[in-house]
Amino acid sequence: MIVRLSFAVLIFVLTAGIAHAVEEALKKSIQPHFIGNEIQSIKKTPYLGLYEITVGDELFYTDETADYFFFGHVIDGKTRQSLTNTRLQEIMDARRIPLDSLPLDLAIKTVRGTGARKMAVFTDPHCPYCKRLEEQLVDVTDITIYTLLYPVLNGSAQRVTEILCADNPLQTWDDFMLRGIEPNSKDCETPIEALLEVGRKNKVTGTPTLVFADGTFVGGLIPTDNIEERLNDALGNALVK
Image (cartoon, rainbow, N blue to C red; front, side, top):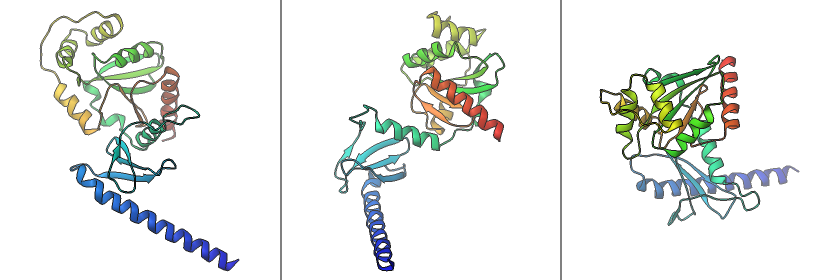
């Protein structure tokens, strides 16, 4: 029994050592391709002998030689679910963007019902998924929404300027996103550069990006029931604290 245990431990140590050596070799080979961005993790996957590499918010795959990089989604053939999407969400959930670290004073603020459940949204007025999100949020109650205008698409900066410079930015935003009413052409000083800088600092790479009260965030459009669940979870976590 003792011999078997010792042999098992020896195999474990040797396997772990080999795995570590492979990961270090991969890191040495891959890092020069991403100057200025540190490799965050290297993880062997259970499929195709590939290794999962994460650099910032980017996830890709390679083999032990690191001669080729594979960008795209690995799909589970049985469930038709994207394993890559699942991993990306796990990585994002492990990160946090504290809600109070955002410039909420620069946001368009919407309060419905008690306003107890809070979230911020980085959004672009010309983003079709952002418009769909606004349509979904109409029926969500007891919520405070901080809309951070984040013009990353071509031509969006001017539209954001017109909205922020309106006499009633909230009404103008709702009219444009929900009813297709274009704002009047106005110009004034806006915090667009500050908003863009905050987005870049927090690695917001697309719109919409939803940030919840517990610091968890989601990049992209998600169903209303998922939003409700996350709002409730975030409120519960805040109460525990």
